[in-house]
Length: 178
Image 1: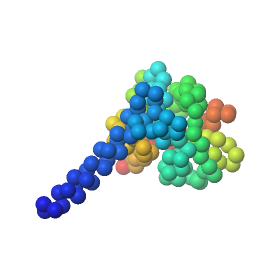
Image 2: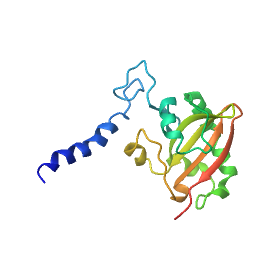
Image 3: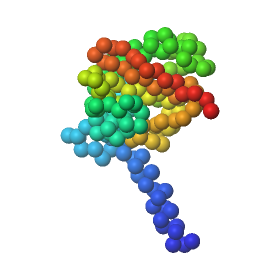
Image 4: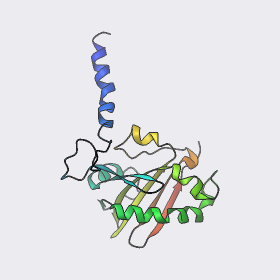
């Protein structure tokens, strides 16, 4: 048992060390990221939201789990892309409020509480942004460099696609209940 303790401590420390990568330094880059490289995950903030955006390389790692059929390529949405999407998300969700089980209008009453994850993908020559919304912000701190995918959970978790060229949303999926 005494020989297992060091291995168990090492295993427990790995997630703690990985979480340190998430916290931003004053220039907006995650700690430990060279300033010349685009970080794996960067944060876009608005008046009532904070969103984590995966760069192209990270999107390739996580995208195949969440988009079917698989995209032909991935890209990194800009801060401007995310701010434009966020400017229109309330209208889209209000139009589709019947897809939610418990949430009622007004959307602006509950939407700011949601954490967001975004990445860009391309299919059939069209660029899209994948949006992943979670009502539990702590999940992002627990899994800062991973796309958080949850089975069930109801209105607490929903996803959609957004085309920045047309500013159209599609494929809203609200998780079900077990």
